[in-house]
Image (cartoon, rainbow, N blue to C red; front, top):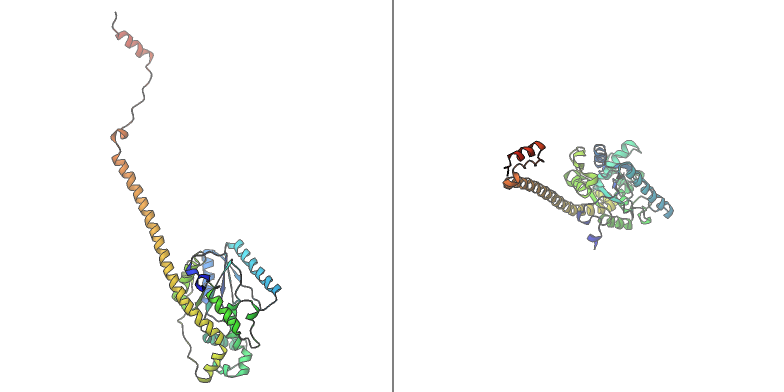
Length: 331
């Protein structure tokens, strides 16, 4: 039963030793990372460390070293602040019960357009002005690594298995997609579409991990209005569909899963608030009963118990004894 095996577990409250926050390149996680940093400054509730980066498919020896490095980061975080947040682009930490994993995802074509614009501006080589034109030119697509950029979310969620190795162009394999989909439903606590962060994403994280993220909504920076780019047409749309097939499957599945889990967390939050209100009401009722009980006891206390106690008798003095002897009748 997938639902029973899921780490989400109907939005059950939890307090892991560390939380890994996966923010693939241009997946919209920048505001979440900023909010995490601001909340850390306000509360000093956790330490923030960078998630180790490794190439999927490395030897078992290297993988063991990477897992040990994560454990060392967790221990350092706990020693410094009691809890740790490991942030980074991935890949996902695997087989570590001490680390809960949350992730951010974004419409892959939006993410690709943003990544292409940044690379074309900052790093070169200079390409055409739009990602649509670059996708139609195989040399441009290879030079900018469009297939790799549009598989980043899949590979981040897939993890470090050999099956997660991309092909020569950087594209995720069918097995990598399947592993990422399995992780979405089972291993990853929650995967939030970036456009839902301000709507209910921060609130969902607060409900899931309150010892870490309570107050995250107040710490989050304001985001500009979400703007969708114009949809590609014709040959450019077909080229982008081929390039982004892996991440599109992940994004669509993540959006559906998140929709269901957000509702469960909303219900869990209401149930928790109701339980807190009920507890406070019971405490107030008990205090009122205690005060009323004391007042009634003071009112109904028998007068015999309330009158001032008699002064203790003292032993008669010698003079008093002599006076009593003189008054006694003589025989």
